[in-house]
Amino acid sequence: MIKNYLAYLKDISRKIVADSGFEKALLDKSRTNKSFAFQKTNNKLSFTEKDELYPRIKNIEDYLSKNNDKKLFCGFGLVAGIKGRQYAAPIIYVECEIFKEDSSYIIEFDFDTNSFNYDLITSILNYSITARYSVADDDVFNEDFQKEVDIVEKIENEIKVFDEVELLQEYANEIFQLLQSKLEDFHNIKRKSNNDYNYSTEINLFNSKPKYNSPQSLDRFFIN
Image 1: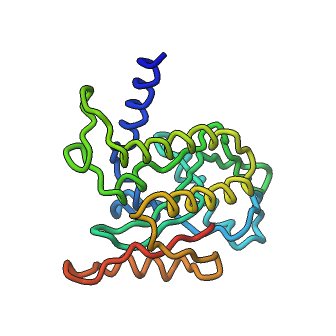
Image 2 (image 1 turned 180 degrees about the horizontal axis):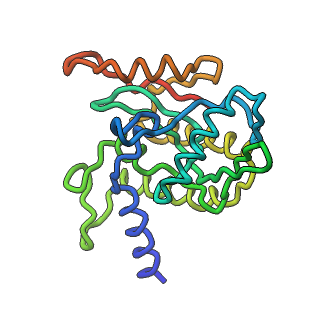
Image 3 (image 1 turned 120 degrees about the vertical axis):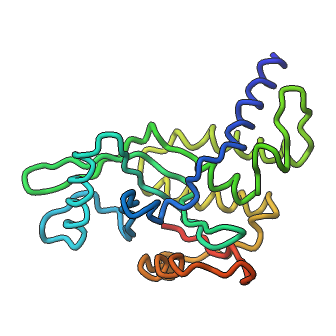
């Protein structure tokens, strides 16, 4: 039993140190690899030609239909700012699909894919494979690392039960409160509402490359 539990903790720890770059999901990777990110301010999931978002949803559906290797995600709880690097990504993300029904487009969520954004959290915590903590098989986890493992374990046990957009929005808020109360790196991130967030403003901010010695502050968490 103890061996199995240690193996499980090591599996969780590998997720903690994983770093594949999903901490800037808001931004285009390149001119040819666009994110198609946009702000959605309500829980409307069906769009007709009368809706403001209809052209954007249609554009995304057209792109996905021609690029089967690409996936669409919806994020909840945006963390944005600068701390050594740029951040603009959700705490939670869920895989979605767009279906065309007559002249309408419908977004459907696959709640079996509810995911905690390890890339974002571990990057903020300044992990790398060779720094902060080593996760070699013979290593003994120290108290701080164990605390972070416990947080991840708690989130993993809870996140899969949510099957409504509203519940995921609420849970993103709960996760942020947990991270802020338990981890020093999150203490100074300010909470802001949807009313304080504007996608165009955020994009302009991130596209203006900060100088190396400019003040750095990971200071914005948006419930969205």
